[in-house]
Amino acid sequence: MHVHIDIAVATDGGGLPSHEQMERWITAALEADASREQAEVSVCVVDEPGSQALNHRYRGKDKPTNVLSFPADLPPELNLPLLGDLVICAPVVAQEAAAQGKTPEAHWAHMLVHGTLHLLGYDHIDSAEAEVMESLETHILTRLHYPAPYADDGSKQDRLTS
Image (cartoon, rainbow, N blue to C red):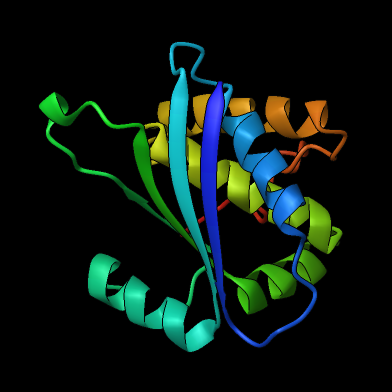
């Protein structure tokens, strides 16, 4: 698979994963779509005000969120590999990792895998879709040697709500 990933950082915060790590995590998620030969994804890392503004404008939620996915809405006749854009809020990811007792690296990996799966058409609106998506996220992340991202005790505390 040929993958092109553009990464922009629009925040002064530290503790960000390397571009190579981000590319590795996104590529692992893209491999869930075996029929895809090429893919192009843009990633923008933002601060809380940036995330909040986008979340309010596009989802009607006036708060920052961990990851926003904007699938490309291209006419089929264009036949371009552009999947869409991911917007990751670095401070929210850091706060969630600490609150959930995860390493920042593992949570960043989860957010980029999660967002990329949204670009591929996966969702978690209803419980059946959520089960499929969470199972795939767990498979991808454990294959990358990260712990399973969701609690296995039946609790929903670490399930994504954004």
